[in-house]
Length: 281
Image (tube, rainbow, N blue to C red; front, side, top):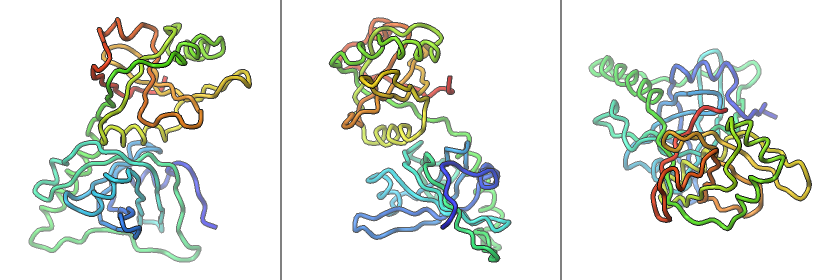
């Protein structure tokens, strides 16, 4: 059985940090697999960015399913299949003009080593025809640089009124202690609830939720575990808290902060709020 891990191994990460050609694999609406050549670049062991051509079946499949696989064939016999949920970063990679290519980001959940003992596979590389070689090599370098440098777009949603479960959770002694440690201050007793109402943002939120985050282990059997993700809402440090309960709405974001976010930011139901991913606390 091929070795499987949950993040990019060091050898593969080193290759993808520099950017590399890849085969993008998606599932079509008819259930059959679709493949497309692309470039891929890793930001860290859990994050890989890649391109999808405008008007392609690959892009349509990504927009419909928000998940993909990337097959990487590199030097030194490296042969890996990388899988995970994916979300859009920006609609166009400017450096790819006039080809037309969207930038997507995958959260790595599985990496499968497909190498064979005693067999070396030739690396995937694009050998451009002489008349366009220099131009295309320059384009390739520019695309990969833009992939790495593009800022992550914020999550966003509209403010909605919750049912009060967030207030109860943040006042549990064990939860308050863990949240205080992550925030650097006691949490406000309650959460700001957002509903994600845009398909592209929902795809990014699904991908974000696939990250491990910081586990908040329940201290008693009557409570549930949760995961926390460090974010910023404007200038306010906050956490997205996702309780690990069956049926938790995938379009819901609950924010915990040391301040009352509604009054701090002057928010009412229906207002739109941007949430920017921050470094892990």
